[in-house]
Image 1: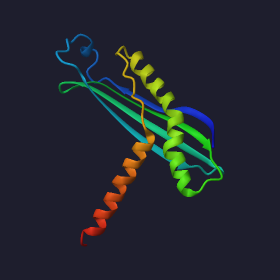
Image 2: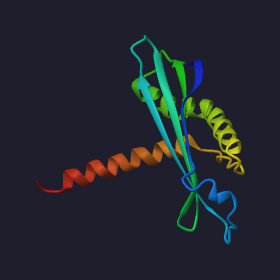
Image 3: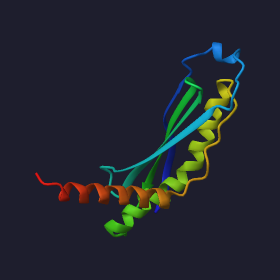
Image 4: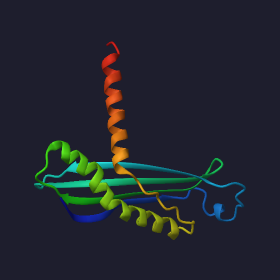
Length: 149
């Protein structure tokens, strides 16, 4: 396995209440919601996989969105010589762990550039996220089998 290329694939920033939010006194600590998604895709080029990690940060004060920042960090990986099961683990755990620090830095920079205090994404256990996603898919499959048609 080898990282061939790492790139910031997509970025967006929304500040629906700017410039008013810069002059309003916050009466309580804003809430921060952070979401993640990992999308591995087998490319048409032999032994190449694109793995994308999407991070979405939404910061609100009461019912007002202060900002919403989203970024997709991607990497092209050369991966060969593994079983299908091993490939699932590599593309959903190892590859995202390699490109995630770039996403963290890029989103922090994006938020800082809009004159807001940076929100640093937490460290992520991609193995736990993957196991959680697999368990959800299994539960969904089992519930669809148990329900009569």
